[in-house]
Image (cartoon, rainbow, N blue to C red; front, side, top):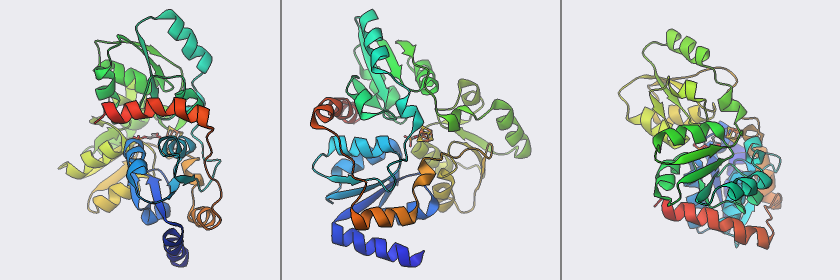
Amino acid sequence: MEELSNKIKKLKKQKDAVILAHYYVNDEVQAIADYVGDSYYLSKIAVSVPEKVIIFCGVTFMGESAKILSPQKTVIMPDLLADCPMAHMASAEKIEAVRGKYEDLAVVCYINSTAEIKTHVDVCVTSSNAIKIIKALPQKNIYFVPDENLGKYIARQVPEKNFIFNDGFCHVHDEIMTDEVEDALAAHPNAKILVHPECTLEVIDLADYVGSTSGIIEYATTSDAEEFIIGTEVGILYQLKQKNPNKKFYTVNSNQVCPNMKRITLPKVGFALENMINQIEIDESTRVKAVKSLEKMLELSK
Ligand code: 13P
Ligand code: SF4
């Protein structure tokens, strides 16, 4: 493992590459990454890094967003099959149908979506900037795609808007059940419950804190509590433990695993970097349309 890490470090210099990783990828990949963060942080950092090559250790929509925003950079995925199923749960036809029904409508798209869907929407958001961005939009009606749970959580925080939802979901978060949260709390009565807003509203109602992956890490790190029940993908425990070696972290159940994020392994990072394979390609007509929604996100979340 150490030999491979050293090889990757050398290759990075040779190829002028930087490694970006999401909190859900395998521990050893997070350990060698130059930047680790939530989707919003990674989309910003991908634009500002000076290196010509980005190795994106995450799922397809993350690599695609980096390529859409920085077409001059080479964006490589260690495994092109690492794709977020929720990203495919919105439909261009449905979007156009909803547009036909409301005059004063903004289509707000979670960044967990395909490049093609991004060409049909007004603005992208992530869980760490959605409330701020939606509040700033002039439109009264908001069609939120693809995630219904996140949409419903945001709608509660922005009661002045009328929300229309889409039936997309993340299987990892949607399958966290309230009785499991209650059992975890019974087993660890002093623990705080921290969950991602892709969880159901019923689970959210049991939580002490709801936020993005970086929000969860920030809350646990600055809290006086010593034990935490974590309602998001298990990969986040690596950073939680790194930053808080004396605190205890538990998942709600044993299925909080995103199989797509777990496709990203250290040997695949090394192989893709060495051979410059798995480059993200987006045709220019899609890119110029999709980039508007991402640039608007970066502008409105400042
Ligand atoms: P964050 O933006 O909070 O990192 O979430 C990304 C994601 O895919 C959650 O499942
Ligand atoms: Fe997609 Fe869920 Fe995996 Fe996040 S955890 S990348 S939303 S499948």
